[in-house]
Length: 246
Image 1: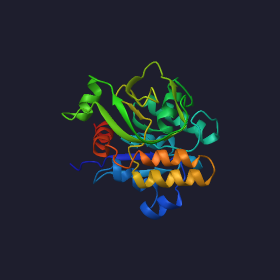
Image 2 (image 1 turned 30 degrees about the vertical axis):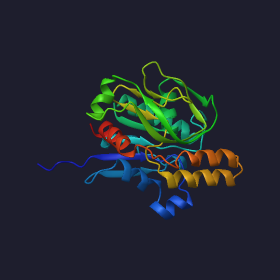
Image 3 (image 1 turned 90 degrees about the vertical axis):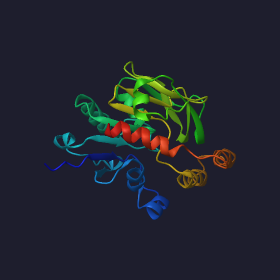
């Protein structure tokens, strides 16, 4: 019997920057190189441009990833409302969804939580987040390597202010109460960016400064967090892959 390929969909909620296009061929490749494995099929839907799979095709996928975005997850642009509607459908179908940054906030919104501007303002750079102890689900994903904290690249001005009733906090930090949460074994939501590396962060920081949306001082501080430290990329990969494919 031929084993069917696992199939995943990326809902891309941001446009590709020139740097990411030139260096990686687009964000799609960044995500697939982080979360994908050989022999899988990954499909791209640019939801930011209104591109979604047909509802009848949702069943074909083993899991979904919702990316970060410069847009507000609490806004009511047509594509954001449509994305919320698709997420509700995926919830009903009991499909696995990994939400990252904007995606993390969208899932909180869909499930009845509250999102808005981050209480402590813009958070950019490498941050250490504290992992909830003794969480059985996390234990299953991490196996023998259960960490007490993880370093992750952050890049956001919004956050989850109130969790949905059905959610469990999995990680927090000094600046953000809800760094990671889950809802059953169906939704895993991460405020930071497990798919980012130093080069991607620095390019975003420079672009935001050039657009006069951030002071140079904040930019320098964000970059300085990565002078002597790196994100725990391998552990993030392990967590996300075990969640999506478990």
